[in-house]
Image (cartoon, rainbow, N blue to C red):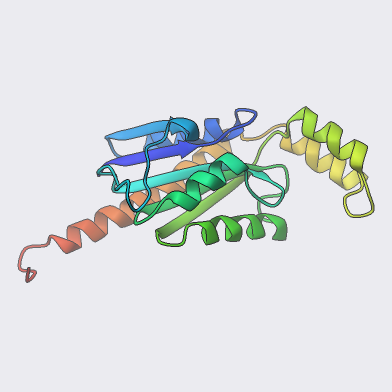
Length: 186
């Protein structure tokens, strides 16, 4: 099984998760930032990749612009999605972010997803503080969440990401083995 891990990272959080995922996928596995990733559009082909892990950092409730542009161009691939965000990864906001990412993957088979918290860029925090409004005030709860996000992704997050992507790779391997089992009519 040939794998590709593509990621977009602003502060290094998503790259850290991408590297952990690449370390656990079967070989060969290529790891590339989104600006160096191959064209996987319908016309670009799959380049022989059996599985593509696509990573992003959450911006304005969905994948960041660079990742979103790439994701929307990917076609006819088996993919797993991963991302980092400042919000709680089990929140409604996080679920909405993954749903938006999955919607961008129309024309692909999405095998699963993984989100974890990640440190928020200090420039983004400064902007949030400057623009704090009734919709997103800097409450004590929000400040506590931002402080917690500074500790992530941690070793548990990386292990959880690896477990999620190992499971996706195992499902693909099992599917491939079943498809080529002796006695199957061809």
